[in-house]
Length: 235
Ligand SMILES: [Zn+2]
Image 1 (cartoon, rainbow, N blue to C red):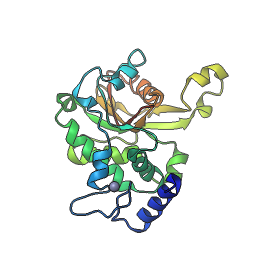
Image 2: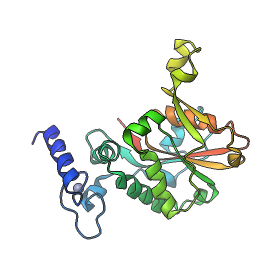
Image 3: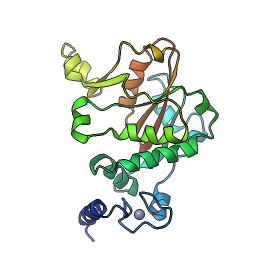
Image 4: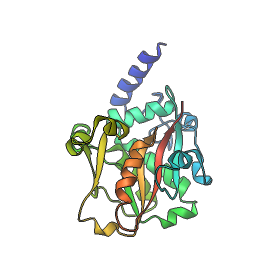
């Protein structure tokens, strides 16, 4: 079947029959949650959390000081994981974020460094985007992780604004080097002093968004930043 048509049918079926796999639309049985066993197996895991100097950590080297960085699954175009992320972001399938967050937690709870983390912080959306979508998919992933490893969650101290609001005086060249948006730490965020923050996002591609967030967070006295994303994009 035409792939586009196939995807459309999956989307429509999943909307009306919540008991279907969000990636392939087969009926879920037993303990299956959001995706069928076959699709869960299809999501290829990076195992980055098991080794220091993994590709995500290397990606951030020389850009910003990151203590640890991990991503759960590889993100490939036209893969089941892309279908899963699409459902999470654009089809209001919020439960996917929670379930994925729990799965991340079951993996990384074995890492010694997770015990050093003081605060979970999802990469925020701009106020306009949040209003439009109704939820922040990265926050859902963080909430899922929090349900398994109850590290405090902070969804208010970091805000995201359109770069044009804050950087109108910068030259065009300077702006092109930056991410589209800017991240601002709330002035009263003294509870973050000296804390180790785990920054969470749904996908990492160039790493520019995480770099921009971490740059803001590292201006708070004595903070440390680690990174955990649901997916890691590869070509
Ligand atoms: Zn499936």
